[in-house]
Length: 211
Ligand code: HEC
Image 1 (cartoon, rainbow, N blue to C red):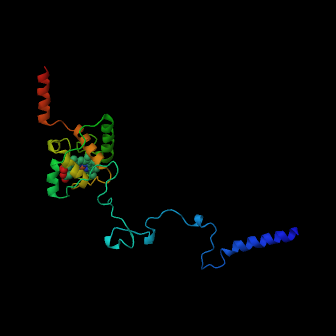
Image 2 (cartoon, rainbow, N blue to C red):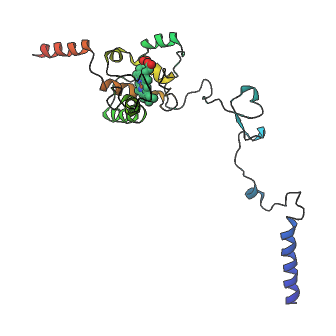
Image 3 (cartoon, rainbow, N blue to C red):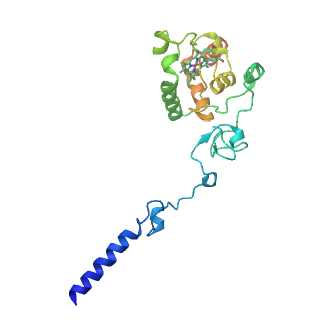
């Protein structure tokens, strides 16, 4: 009796084991499909393609990736989009755009300095004097010395425009730094610059007033 039971169990186990792979051309029977197939919510699954495209005409067939956030959307906590166009007219108009950050706390200034040293100092130098390692190695020409008068006079808006779109040998920082961070870094650049002549004179007259 015991022998028969052992044989039955063995036969059953063997047949269950072989049911799954009796025909190589068919997929085997699946025990626990939840484990075989992912139940993850696959947004683009109906497109049946793992290939990404940036070609708008192939949008229906493949996963379309245009590198930009959905039009008209703003990331939580992000500033309003910058709308001036990347052309000479936009560059000119950028001079009137105000920096939304009036004053920075000590912590913000420290963070802005960290971002500057990571992203900008390689070219512009830690003090912004245009003598970072890439500049001194002569790899990239025309790196701006941000402590010069021309840049002291340049408005925050124009700097933001150039950081957003890039300018000649300087690339765009729109994907590395959020809008908020770009405005912060500009404030940091200001801290590296000598004070404009008029402001310095005003400061002097202020002191005389106090005396
Ligand atoms: C790859 C080297 C490089 C890096 C990195 C770089 N810059 Fe520049 N930057 C340049 C060059 C070159 C110019 C001069 C562009 C021109 O006027 O031809 C420039 C110009 C500028 C200007 C003047 C823009 C104008 O409108 O004339 C500002 C402001 C500036 N950079 C700030 C920054 C800040 C802030 C960062 C970091 C987020 C940064 N740069 C990173 C190379 C660089």
